[in-house]
Amino acid sequence: MTPHGARQGLDAEDLDVEEALALVKDGNGATRPPGGPRPAQRGPAASSSASARAADEGHRAAEEHRHCATAWPEARTIAARAARSGARPAPVSVGLGDALGLVLAAPLTALTDLPSFDTSAMDGWAVAGPGPWHVREEGVLAGSSAPAPLADGEAVRIATGARIPLDTTAVLRSEHGRTDDGGRLHPTREMQHGQDIRPRGQECRSGDQLLLAGAVVTPAVLGLAAAAGYDTVTAVPRPRVEVLVLGDELLTEGRPHDGLIRDALGPMLPPWLRSLGAEVIAVRRLRDDAKALLKAITSSGADLIVTTGGTASGPVDHVHPTLRRIDAELLVDGVKVRPGHPMLLARVKEGQHLVGLPGNPLAAVSGLLTLAEPLLRTLAARGAPEPYTLPLRESVHGHPHDTRLIPVVLRGDHAVPLHYNGPAMLRGIAAADALVVVPPGGARAGQEAEVLDLPWTTAGIGACFT
Image 1 (tube, helix red, strand yellow):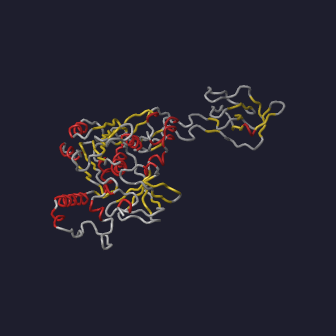
Image 2 (image 1 turned 120 degrees about the vertical axis):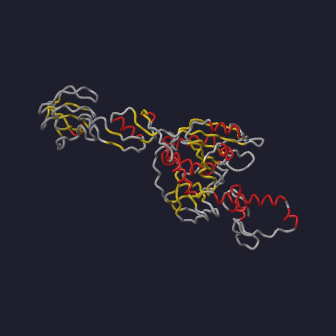
Image 3 (image 1 turned 180 degrees about the vertical axis):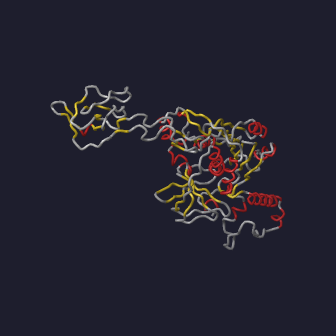
């Protein structure tokens, strides 16, 4: 049985050779740990072959990189801390129509009393004194000028939200009053003084603090700000992100052919980044060219540069050499997580970071959740979501050393793992509500696992892409 078949979709390409071998049985039925003795090779040709020596060197390099990689929880912490290390972005004044999803940089203080005058809470009659009442011919509508005061025994038709006449005792609801043959109004049930009147300042007085700085601007916050007299709010600006999609083999349209494949990350990453609160200022596609990558990084004005592919050590993997060339500070170089372990985080210069995502689609999603999400959340001044766990409906095979992120659907009080979860696959994540965090060694059915919600499953498709 192959490692792929034995492990429910974990691609062997996401393992180095040593780790792949650690997941299958050797001849005597025991699982050989990585780094343990290899079975004896048969024949002098095998022991002396150049390919075997090259393989050994590859094994050692992969093992060294694995040991220097950062643990998954620590990588997320480093990414969040990196965003706090620079100067804070200056607050901006944003019109209410563009503020959804931003974070308030200053408290929201009422600019007026709410309501700003006594208003009717219901359609009916404003009445003065005990009934029955004589009803004025002309009623009071919302938005009309101040009505004349009422005298005792007098009533006037009034609409919801209309200004209450002076000396009004209460509002009698339409369904609670009747008129007699003489046109006089009678209540059909007992009334209370002040009934169905919203007094001035009932919700707040001018100068009251309505929301603290740090509140996320939701649709309800927009409504409150407008009601309180605001045309703009003071907010933390969205982090500016530039996406660099790398690769000679990528097509932007049509079907794959002749060794070329469709670019899945170009369409996927910008809306995903926007769902994390970012402003995507550009998506650029670059060939596997070191000079072009150097120019793109050094000319970028983004707060965060996101690259796709090129983070390994192959002949056209130019991200590491380019970062060394510009003296970028490498904060995370590989993460102990599958898929996506070749991801990286670097500080390009003061106030600018780069997240290098692997080129495989689900591995890139892993990099987004591990490094880009904490960094962008901190830059946007958003609070971290409250962590929670759910029991797994089925057991999940683990990696021997690393954390795994597995797409799941949420059914009742359980998380159900999805198949098609290899690093190059999107079929699982496209159907998912969330990902679960599987510790090294795997998790059994019923075991609690940390859940990472996908933005659109909690906020709704339209709400999260702001």
